[in-house]
Length: 344
Image 1 (cartoon, rainbow, N blue to C red):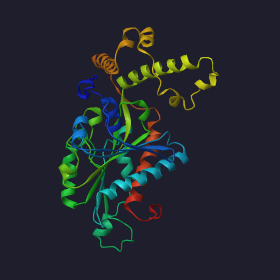
Image 2: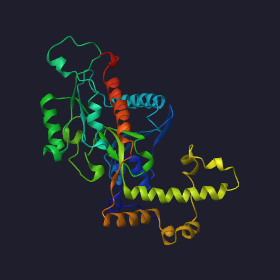
Image 3: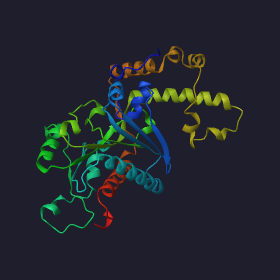
Image 4: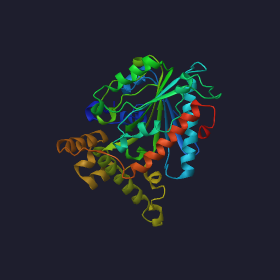
């Protein structure tokens, strides 16, 4: 039997089910397809697979894309996100006039953690119209928003705030939006995960708060997240392995035009490359002989001992968060209201 990663031992911080599956080497059935330049992966975890991966059972939809700073790309991602979110909502079989509470999790004062609060800033809130008995336009759903902040600011558990509000206003569905952590640098700001299994706020950076899910609130919870941070150990680990892949590619293509090594789609050229153990050892000595698990464990051990295992985000995160929050808020508005929300 091959060696398997103990996720708790190696402290691999990730909220993405795709990362978890890749790290654990488990063979989990998935449905993968392309849509408007995006890669969509649908995974349904039963109780057995959920236990193996330390994830709650449920449906997980992951949308991967290249860039949201380009207008055309952003429109494509938005359209795919709307389609996938609508499918997840429809699968819950809610009553026709269901009410929704949209929760923006995170810290608005910390840019990589501000996705949730910035998303609800642009979501359409209508509950006050229903309370005032106004003549609400056909197609408008009863929606409300909440940004509970973080426990360091409020002193109150996020779950306690959300559960108190749901007990008072009685929504039929809660949609939580939060920034996540990833265990691969190529998914940072380039992935949206949608799941009906709920969420643990702050789990990606080690601040585990009480779970927000149907099990704890008594109503369906859809969690929407984007990985915006990654640990230093992951960056070092990925850099070493991309180096090995790069050298493997050069070895097999050294007599071919150097334009092959250009940055354009280069990751697609090298992502499946592997060096032999002998080549790895010749290049990196003892480090080259280590398995992936041992390599990551060693990097984490050194950086943790030095207190250098930082949580890192890309330098352009301010700009990208604005674009991502626009995609998610527009997508939520389109799925919940059968109108052109721009005209409201």
